[in-house]
Length: 282
Image: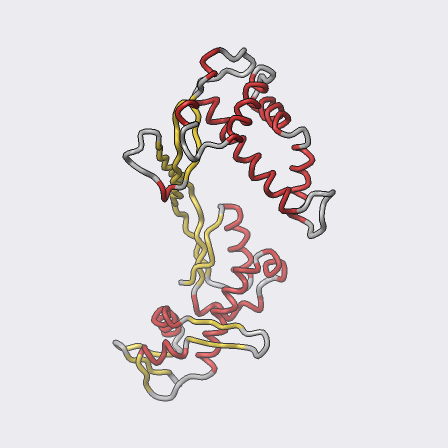
């Protein structure tokens, strides 16, 4: 079976519907998958962190903005707005420019795309830093900041490659998120039905369409140019490498899955496999 991809339940139903309508033999299987993210950080009192090379003045600027925003905010959203406003009064305009730049190749206002990107990167870092500070120091929004915040516990991200088990300030966090996805597979021999796939599918799922088309091109080449007599699986694998086109070349290498393709064609009665030998049927 040829794997088309993994999708949410609703999207899997849509894709499977398109393929079934085109005549494909489709299998949809629910799977539980886990995604793991490993991060590292330095965590300690501000006075300790100031002695580290990783500490920079921007973190003191972030802390000043946190102090100013905490007493004004009663909700997380309020805090974000006040905090970002303390960092940069024009943060909303920069955010809007960033979203416009993602959808347009034209310059927005007077800022270059690089400037907008750098500003957004710092905003994201600042918000993450602020959330950690609030949690690590049990800060309550809307309440006055007491003296304990003179030397708060802070966390600074560092490269996981530089993680040192002997460093008492280093922390490592492993996040494992599990979700259910739906895997769509098709029978390899049904790939030649790709011209019958609805045009809307071709537009919405271009990568999937190209993958299916590539498989179909290999199978079409094998079926339309069958070898005479017998051949071993290694020679068959060589025939599973196809280059199409002159100026715009589509290069397809299916040699590593030659046996799977042969098994699929055998089920369709196109060839016969016996051990390591393949014989094309007349």
